Length: 400
Picture 1 (cartoon, one colour):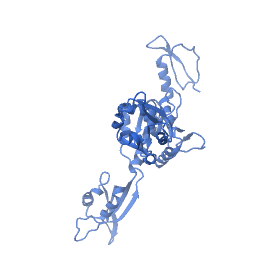
Picture 2 (cartoon, rainbow, N blue to C red):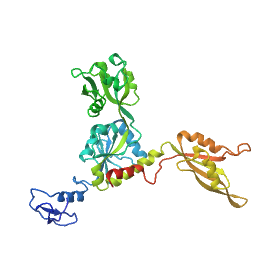
Picture 3 (cartoon, rainbow, N blue to C red):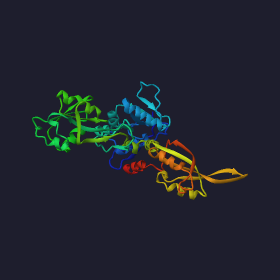
Picture 4 (cartoon, rainbow, N blue to C red):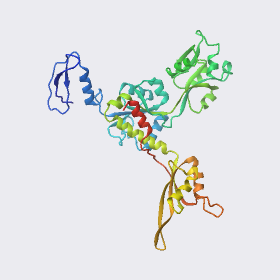
């Protein structure tokens, strides 16, 4: 419970008195409730509490079930942000590394809705869910648009047979004379916002939508729909049900994204700092996926000479170039350094080629080869930039 000191002063825009509030007071006074409240009072209360709802914790919404939920928890774990749930039946958990943060397990569509209502501050969902239930609302900000899992596409699919046999594009579908006001194209979908918007933009005027969740592929064969608009991953299920995607029929490409409430980032104390840390951890981990550190000892007269040899091979340039440092050892009682250790970062697809180049040794016939020995390889866990570009983009989006 808050303890207030209430001081009256005249509101600059009306004759209604306003109250200055302080949480440090040890006493309070009760005043008659005014019929109108000056906006300055509301502003002071919001400043005191972080936002007008009065809560101080930051809330992150995560999917509660399914593959998306499992992959989200795995990603956070890889970023050293493991979610701790005391009771698996509870919907609230925590991430110990982020103090003041609560994790709420919710249905993906409810995550978007609660970000809009202010009950959540951050959330991880698929872009398809953001687009369907967020509907372009300016109070939602996509903080990270590529978490690299949950890949799928929202696509229109029609039968391979009958009147659709020679229909191969959205344009062909729109030009079919069969669709009239009395007999519209029947589309089964769970995307009741994106579906109508997409088909209207592509010239399909006579369409009737039926809402459904799951097993939409059977709808055309059952005669209850002419087409479906649904999420597609590999396309195997469509083929097994004699359905096909058509050119221009993809509504959007989707994957998991980190979403935030614009109001929370601006108003809630600590929300922006927490978001910054989450972005940095995500970026550092995702950038390191598929990257390896390669270390090799190479003979040379100087670090400059070794660096020039390494940089003569484009596959050995690393992120910004090799790190070259002398290797000291004793020879005839003296400390010498005619070997140098080079460290480079190499993507997985170039790993073997890079190792082969480093292992090449100097011979009379191959004087231009680098000559390396003792090649060590280890996977990278994180690659931190000086500052992640997505953080700077977020600050620009917020006008900060």
